[in-house]
View 1 (cartoon, rainbow, N blue to C red):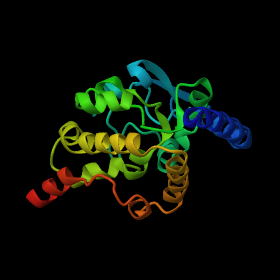
View 2 (cartoon, rainbow, N blue to C red):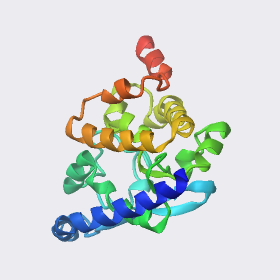
View 3 (cartoon, rainbow, N blue to C red):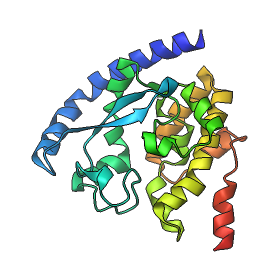
Length: 228
């Protein structure tokens, strides 16, 4: 019953949101077409439910060949590959909104684990991979809230970006997604949606720690900071 209600909710929210945002999307698409490399959308292979791949749709915010330049799949603060308009879109998370089309197609849900590229997904342990593959990936999720400013976190370490992602960020992301699988419910999903909107407005807020008091502790980051 939970999955049926969740799917009906996904379809309703995706349709209504797309209709509501269309007057805003049209001028934005014109701006994107006339700036940067002239691309409006960007589609990237991501790992979905069952481990299969699907094309995740975003507004184009980076150079088209970004995966083969610099830090590859990892985007860092002040990343030179990000286009001028793209910085605003990424900061406000507007670049993620075309994924509502993925939700309508059934590739994604409104709430669930954030779908990763195949390369980054392979950084997870086998236990975490199996947990995530059993879930529908989401437009937002507990990992999206906790790591909403992930690009800035890379400034806190002297490790290479890939080492930091693999050793510090990936284990905690995996623990958060396993936590979601254990606690998923209509109430949890509703709270995550509200917290997502809250954190977009109040970017530095950690209200999620008060709402979800049993979230996994990020021990690896503390160890790095204590060792520095």
